[in-house]
Image (cartoon, rainbow, N blue to C red; front, side, top):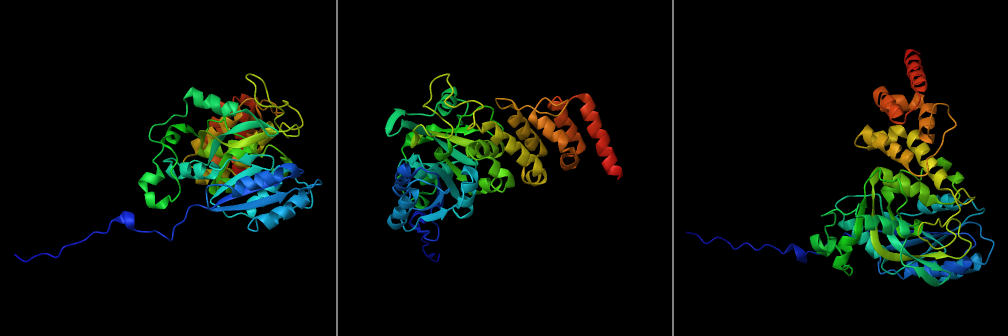
Length: 392
């Protein structure tokens, strides 16, 4: 019997995949008259353990010493892109401009008065690359500080969700450093992280459980579905009320039960006025800076105005309908001026019936109206109008 040639198999763990790199993360810092904090925010970006980062600073026509700080930062960090707006268009417009100038697969919007801890990006990206469920963003806990002194080690809503156990899912994490070790060249997070990731299912947006803007890391693909909104200029603050609820209601999100950034309170914050206290609001409900309800209205408007797009992208029209209903159920309820409609969503759907009914199909459209408890005579009128449109 002839001797067969010995076959040697190469150990795949020795193959260096030099053509592949870690995802690029775009950190967008929006600044308006926060010159006294801006340097610390920028320093925290360039002090990250994660290597593949681009930093974009958008200045909203500041009138303080931000100009000089930006000049110093451009010298210290030549790779940072600095965009200077001629007028203060608000947080949302500045964030959108920063996003349009960015190219990362993941995006972090860092408020100029907040600070990222060194493991922030490394941990978020490790979680995203290890998740079995491709959610729209991750949101990590934050330390709350007054000026430069720590007061709390957590964000209350996030901690309450973690304590409830609702987000615990077995097998949600398959560590990328174990499943593809050659693709994760960085230090591996400790094993405890696996139990600190909690899932927020799509449509679970009834109460606010996420960290503020600076604590989140978004998928670019998810942001693109919501930052193409021409009405964003109306939302001058609380952009997280729009992006976080909009993205999570469709694609879900995860919470990371680990403090990875510092949320600074200094008396001039747009939304929160003091660190969280149990059973106490940290903001002025209905005050000039409370744009949470406006943000939710804008999500509803955007989903309805782009119904064809979202219905084409989602697996089922029922997921689209359930997302709208989940936004309608969120506290506090949004009222409607339209007669026979109990909520803002119901009124909006009735007003946009001519476009939404054909997109959803009449059966689904009427089912949505019934679930929203729209008055029968309003539903009948919508049916008659739809029949007239079909004839014409």
